[in-house]
Image: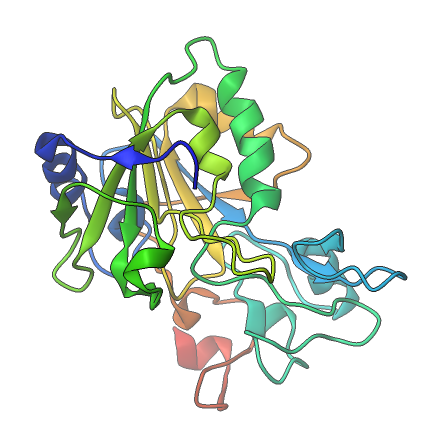
Length: 261
């Protein structure tokens, strides 16, 4: 957890809350008013021949390759049950020969954060200081997470965020102490002091979102190590967002395109 410092500027917390859009939309996660929005897909993992597992050297598997293998359509609003319909559990189960561990929920994984940090560092004016919001509802004990400063509410449905500050290197740092099992828990929001962009993820989601300007948008889209797609700020972030693939909802009932529309 080296590098995180308690966030001591309540104005930053108020700003983060002030830009929040409608709940269950992209802008509800990263805020309204950005010229462009990107969805960043968390990869699945295929265990290595030496037993390497997710977070410990396993190879990554893209959403596009899973959709192609299952003869489904990969598109900006695809959801995991739509492209991996044979998985019994989108949180834990794999698909034999394709992936062993599905995309992580509630945390932007290092496989996304590391190349994104490289993109940010290569921008004409890379951020020197970042602000971070971590949602306390993840269930970790207080002594497992970094000491924080101000607490703030993002939405009525998402309260009790802890505010941190730190350098660009903190973006890839786990806010939770490693339990010995390779635990990596990212923050749930991140933004620079000039508010030029916001990176966000929700506890229930296996993709992250980035609200930003045109330059950063183009740079992230051009990065071969980040699977991304443009979405609108008003786009839903729920099972109903996929209007192309048939989706099994959490109650195990198949939703067709007509039913979800």
